[in-house]
Image 1 (tube, rainbow, N blue to C red):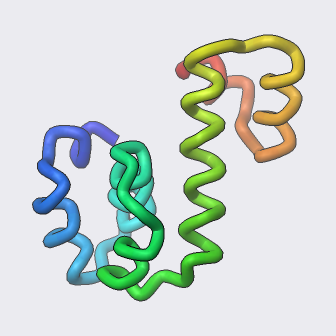
Image 2 (cartoon, rainbow, N blue to C red):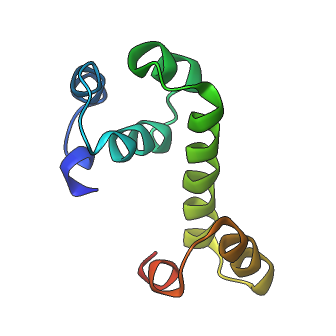
Image 3 (cartoon, rainbow, N blue to C red):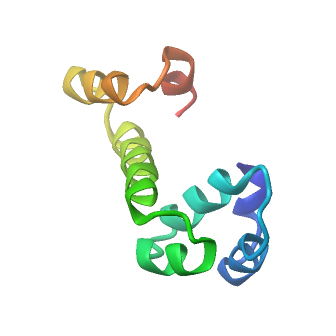
Length: 89
């Protein structure tokens, strides 16, 4: 989400210190930047299990940017990526 890609990592953590309805997008942006799930959990109190699920989605985004071979596409579909989302990546 463009809103978070333009913020610094510290600004995103600050934003996450209070609940917002777009929390998940901020968490995913931190994961894209390689921030550890434990640190995100400490700030947000979101269970690490859920953060790890978000991380799987972010990792699939990276895979799709690198290759859209049949195996990767099948994995993406299993994770719930729609054709429209896959085509945008």
